[in-house]
Length: 243
Image (cartoon, rainbow, N blue to C red; front, side):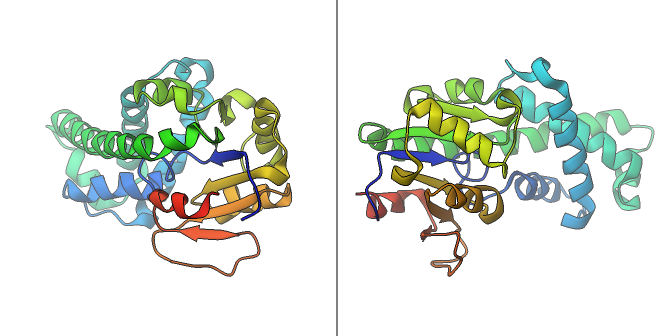
């Protein structure tokens, strides 16, 4: 590896529960609750809820992780009830639908939050030693409340820069959000490293700026992509890569 003094991270799927995209995590908890949903069934609901959260703007900027997840799940459920597969609509759209809705909402939210909190706790333990050696930052497509989420997780002191797309006004894969974080840290792209779980949104734009890149991919030990310098399956492997 070339010398680096700055390390940037994606957030969702990289820091909160590394290697697990939020769509797949939500789907897992829907399925664990006994609902027969496929990824194809759930994808429109996830996209709709995410768009609704982005439209909330400043209303979400001081929201913690629990309230954010609650908003997303409620919005997903309402979308699925109105336009989801017939089997899902039949489960909830009946005389006791309100009670079933509330129970399902609580189960999905609690499962998702428990995963996130466990993942963030472990990530914090891995990154705190790195924060003493490198300038650390986050570049994330988020809802304006990422700093609040980090504060709740006792991780604020780890990161000097938090480029939250809803605050910055530009989202990955647009290179400008990476440039924003690098300016914040007064860092040279040539001495910076980007770590994320998405080739298209994390590695490709960072590489185009001259950064080195690490792809977090639990399903593979290596990759030949021109956009990737290193591939890891777990964040603990950063100790083997970073000088």
